[in-house]
Length: 503
Image (cartoon, rainbow, N blue to C red):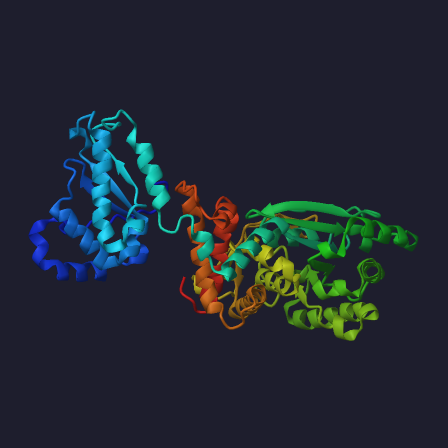
């Protein structure tokens, strides 16, 4: 049924008179095999025929009540079959009388108030209409939908923590995130962003310096919007007299609050901090203030140009040089917290034979602003793999590079390769994601309880609306047709598996 699993439970012996002597055993068997919480709707089927309640129907009502309790009748429907044998002129009155008789029998166990709310519907498996000439299938569907378990009550039963998280999903889906790139043209900024996001976002291969330009690239990945802001003129050899104009242009076009992560991109093979890079650090600081560096990452490109035996030392030295330049404006304590990561857009590994994509992903995850954590994670969750996924140990030897190398920019075009995390990277992301979750729901120590609730709520959201329930709760209707439901399940399954909670 449209991909939605349906389970039908039929205990035929309930309405067989011959089994009356075995009722206690039958009740035990029902209780052992069927959980009340698994029953979304009870169909009590009986022939319309005579107006009295048959003896086996009386027994079935009693056994159902003893097996599940009176609450089962809140989600029940009385279905009358064999309507074809009823005279057309007598049909309306007989339907009313038989409905009242069945309700009266049920009322012996539930009370009249509850029993009188149970709807009845006549059907015919030989005709599209009942004896009164009315199409019965539409009414049958509508009656069942209205009695589905919890429909119309879902909003009352949703855990407040789950509501908060669902609201965060919605907010994250609309908000997205923004990366600000600083680095001269031709250093592989665009290629690196494209590879990280698995999509051709920025243009690749433009080697011409661009003076006083701020470029904006908008894209969506997995339904999550994000923006890349490139400032190529900052690190190109243009005269310092244009600095005031550049600062003014940046301030007019880019709000600090919109920047979730700053990438300072420079080649690893350089031996010093170039004058244009020194200028860029100063201009960025004057444009946004020292707080921008709290969300910054130093990205060293062209790592493959460095000899393997010199790679680790070169990475440390270059990192310290850039940090020292940043420290002139922020102080040493802030600058030394700015992490660095080396990438090579012509290879999946850096010279130390370690894959760089997982490291870049994790480093950005650590530094991205808190409001961007969820949308960033949601946009990439399809591609994130860990050692527990059977995708290898994270050494980079188990998967192949699918990027097309562009020699003009020293990088690759967009690629949809998996982001494979090693154990340390997995722990880093898990810890920040759990920290975000704890702050969001403000319940430190109860994550193991919240995660399964969220998974269950997200899974339940879509089917209720898909089944056409008019009384679906508001949170369901808000998110059911949005990718946020599927992403929510994925995100929390991942967190659940990482912290040892069953999926």
